Image (tube, rainbow, N blue to C red; front, top):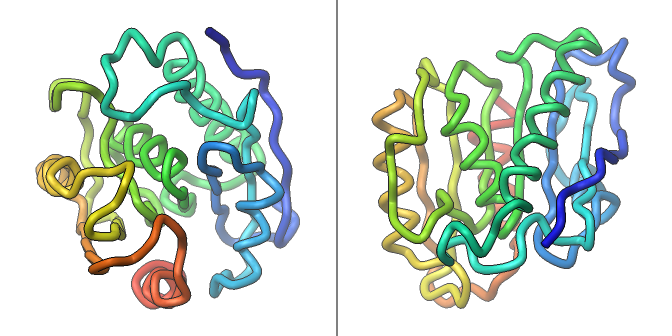
Amino acid sequence: MYTHQKQYITAGTPANKAGAALIMIHGRGGTAQNIASLADELGLKNMAVYAPQATNNSWYPYSFIAPDAQNQPALNSALTIIGDLVAQVVTDGMPEEKIYFLGFSQGACLTLEYVARNAKQYGGAVAFTGGLIGEHFDTTKYQGDFKGTTILITIGDPDPHVPISRVEESVAALQQLNAAVSLKVFKGRPHTITQQEIDLANELIFNK
């Protein structure tokens, strides 16, 4: 089992000149560079981009709905990495209400898990194919108040890694924390990010 080394790349507008920040979290087998390249397709206006890199290119070793012990200590370490990066963004001069999150697949699950455990007013969040993490759905881990933060979740139906039922449970839990959640289900969509999803993220989150 492993823990993560603190490493990330930056892109977009330099932090000292940016009006907002976006934390982009890659999926299993992906890289920080790979997810950061997606920023070019997003309607980011004057936004600094931060993309953390997972050790072994994976944030946790097993499915996001595997028994919790199987994904430790990697999962807790991954959540710590995201928390430390948020703190770095704040240190760089960005208030939390100007911080956005985006993740794909394993990165989408980690995105949702982090913001749900630390609910407050953020700029917005995008989870391309993801749900909250854990073998058993436990809402006692989640606390705070999103104060109307917009969260977009997209999912293929069916998806080989992420059950629709868990996504729907996740939507309800996020709504309980006062998030404005938009769920879009794409019938027969493969496990990828489509242009339609990017357009939706721009419309709901980045071009507001």
